[in-house]
Length: 263
Image (cartoon, rainbow, N blue to C red):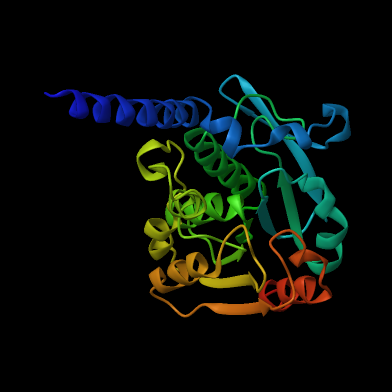
């Protein structure tokens, strides 16, 4: 190898080394970049529901207790799920709604990973089904929670599933936001709703934000394309990813979709 070739090789290595270092940092720190529980922490004394889970306890809130049917709500990343209590009290008076924080969020113990969040979600569904033996258990998932909700609907009988600002997969969305990095190769927690939603055999409602910069519209469209049944879709043209639920039509859409089945 001549001197010019050696200089080019050294230059390429000098440019490549920082890139590889950044990829390694992304891989090692990825869960700190995916999950934001620090914004949601509350004292356990503020909650009114607890579910022991293999050395940790999941905690949250129960809205409209005593109803025959129930709803499980899986929130978005950095969302304090208790802020939905008033909205669900108004929108779903005939359902008992369970707002349980992911592990590491709210007053729940532990650290979040996809495998643990999905296993916790199934355990929560089964516990709520035990508490409502004569009722139906519907599921709502928002943003990150849409991945959790889609998984539950693929593993359990869910008569009605509501997905708010959902994505096809976390890996696909992250890759779109950071095209310069091999995110699909690096990401551990993938939340592949595109693969799981086709197994849902109940009704589906999707609430879509017209100005969603977090989950670009093509990712929601790909998820809808994967669903073999007919989905109800309500668009919020002026809403962004985080403020869709501030529109009065949000609560109205939940009421219309979930409440009429009750006698």
